[in-house]
Length: 185
Image 1 (cartoon, rainbow, N blue to C red):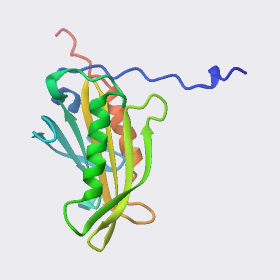
Image 2 (image 1 turned 45 degrees about the vertical axis):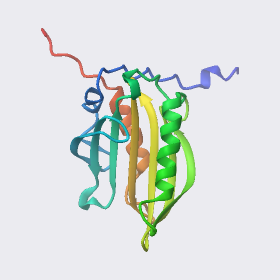
Image 3 (image 1 turned 90 degrees about the horizontal axis):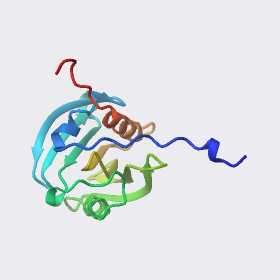
């Protein structure tokens, strides 16, 4: 066997959009036990929108940010652009530094999603917020020409309160679903 027949075919690229809001419209109402909350405009780290998600009782929280690339140019899908690499490093460094003396995280694992032809570069982090052990996942990538950031955080427990990777996979899948225009218009 040459191995070529064993390879999973690459998924089609996520079609480009002209504004972050258009890609955010594709995000699901529910993903891996996280339910969609408010969609709010944001200005930092760049202009775009943030879609909030949480599990019942808000024991785990997540967000998906769809950001307009600096200069308004369309980014190539994936993790290779300098904009994605810089934002990934900035996001991980910011998370590790924390927002106070009692909030510390460290990178426990890094991975790409999907593994073949990745859209996201991700870091799984562990640490504490005060005395509470926590786990978090930060992912940065590009799709639809936009810069994407995903974060999911929760108290660290065994078994985990939610599946961050399943959440991310469902987000990626939802962005591939392009709405069809209504007939006749």
